[in-house]
Length: 439
Image (cartoon, rainbow, N blue to C red):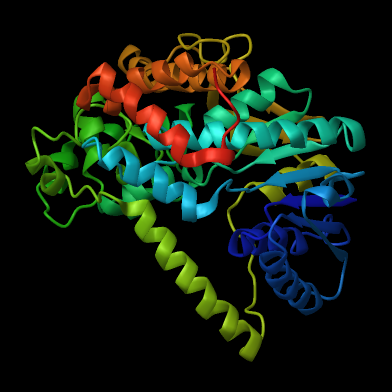
């Protein structure tokens, strides 16, 4: 069996996913093909993963493929392809995504999923994924593409609508959603045996139901504790707790993410909201700088002291592969096309996040029915942007980029149309060759 990792220079994440595979008896004898356009980062990953492979018993084999000219060989014969690329990296592209909008008074927190940052990231990444898909159709047409790259809904939606490649989008937030909520509200004793229903879109999937092991609805107690928690100045999850208060339900992704997915919290006319809701503006650039520095230190330490022991994480990738290979069923929260109206009050061409059963026959999404109307409405403000961004990437029409930015909740609530168009033009110019030509 062959497992190909695209963007293997993302060493920490590659180590987690491939390390997880090395922990699974059904996967550990695989060929692990590492691909990246950065040969130096690829070599760092190889050193770490080779040491981990030996520490795990020496099973399997690691192969490295550097550069676009070797991409097809990296993919050839793969059973599974894990995608974790970042086109343009932190420097220069993430810096551009934050600094150009600032000149127009538009501030962001993460900028990788929605907003003008998410739009530009998608437009950089979709052409690369299209190339991946063309190669895969030639050399591994039956492989399952496991996408971890953001903006999740835009990239996965593109792959599912415009390529023949079997694809599922995977995020970290579904696994930890209810646990994080119960812990912060002092309800740890309800964790064991709990049952939950989560559905919506990536980063804004709703915790629609949560019950304890005896089948008791936990939402009444959760709602009773929200006001007290919101009054805590040290609370950093206030946006999502406000969702419970105003929309009735908690959602999957963090408050620093969700602060920029709507028109409510980052407002130049109400600067006091930033402090009130503990919103970390420019959070993603800070994280990037810290991660880059942290990895340099960790790599030096690993070279000196050896590889740290890896325990299997809660990432879905290895569990999906194991379920398909062994036929043993496993449930995930997956990003899939809303084919047939899995969520009946969202568009069928939207990418939705729902519970999926994985077994020897592949990934099988479950039908949810209708979301509460207010939750669907919140999702639609994001889906509008996602669909228009995909349309822009496919048609190469600049008007669709303008429209995506105009309909983005945060951007449209802060800037007038002419400013939005000028900002988009400035971003396109600043990104240069990282973007295809638009007309």
